Image 1 (cartoon, rainbow, N blue to C red):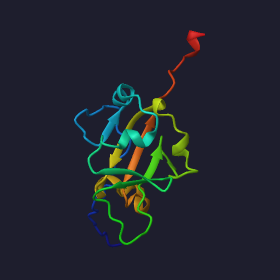
Image 2: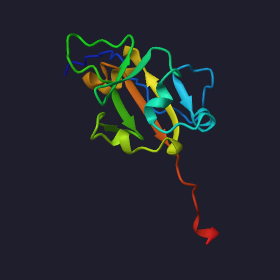
Image 3: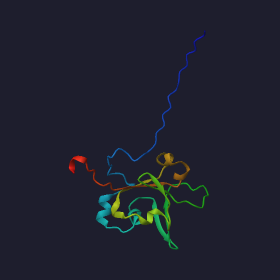
Image 4: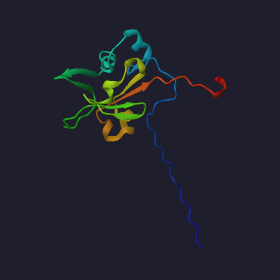
Length: 145
């Protein structure tokens, strides 16, 4: 019997996720709940307009158009970013779930622009990703009742 010794190379896969709960107030790609309350906004797209560099929000012919500068479209006619609310991708548009989201229920909005941040979303994140985190209800334990 002959013994063969092989050296294996470790493979590490990393991606950006919701984070560890620690907020970085210096991040220019995040709109926090305090900013939302202070400005008393009525619609989600108003939160992005003028708050995050490189994000363009326009109303064209009754439909909402959001573009993220630096995102690659590769000739694709649909250059909408991917919207993710509490981890679930949602459609953008007149019938999309974004229209029914109350700005007062939003904890934060984070815009992912570059390839390293959007890689975890694959081809759907090619035009950028807008992560929306909603407020959570307070936890009530059985001892409180």
